[in-house]
Amino acid sequence: MAGGGRNPLVGSLARLLLRRERRALRHLEGLPGVARVATSAEYPDYGRAPSIDRSIPRSKEVLLRTFLEGVPLYAALELPRDFFERLEDLVNELHRRGVCHNDLHKEPNVLIAPQGRPLLVDFQLASVHRSRGRVFRVRAAEDLRHVQKHKLFYERALGTAGTPPLSKGRPSAGAALWMGIGKPLYNVFTKGVLGLSPGEERRPPEGPWPRWSDPIGPPRD
Image (cartoon, rainbow, N blue to C red; front, top):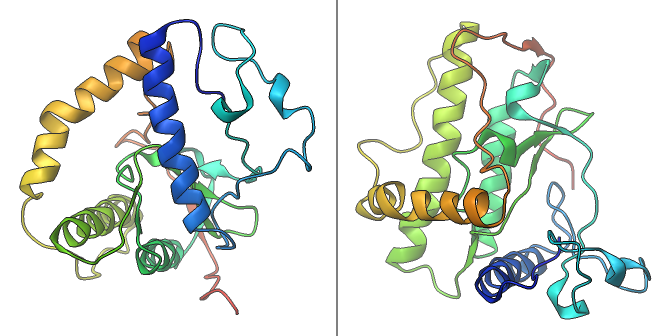
């Protein structure tokens, strides 16, 4: 991921998102299911990675992550029966480390590894919290609410709904503000300014739907 380019506004915003992602990933170092920040020693040619405008950024404007093999949730052909329970476990582990993802409403940000375990990507909007105050609690609840929405969406279609929701009621005021103002601005930036897809691919309500596979169980220590 290269953050920069010849447009000063684009470069500043891209570097801001890059710094947020780098900080979050470093706080999650060693957590299975999340990419790791790679080093120049591992990939000595990383500084030659071009920006969107094909210019070569400075090394501090580049975030190199390890590769996670998986398919996005909306494209999965099969899911373990306990996939969403394992996804909830992973999100809770983020929260235990003081990190909120803040972008889990997007199916492309949830991947399924070849072994069936959940993976999380795209931490550009993630936040790192030193305390567990109100802001953290609200954002953590929103992360889990989106996990629950994905879970109910798939389980209703596949005939296995019935798990109590993780959070009840309407989205928080902060989430409503983000959906009304923040998200449109973010999409304008990523699609209109950077020329990127906003990443809103999702499985159509009419399917096709994945099939259930055997549960994978909790991760082993």
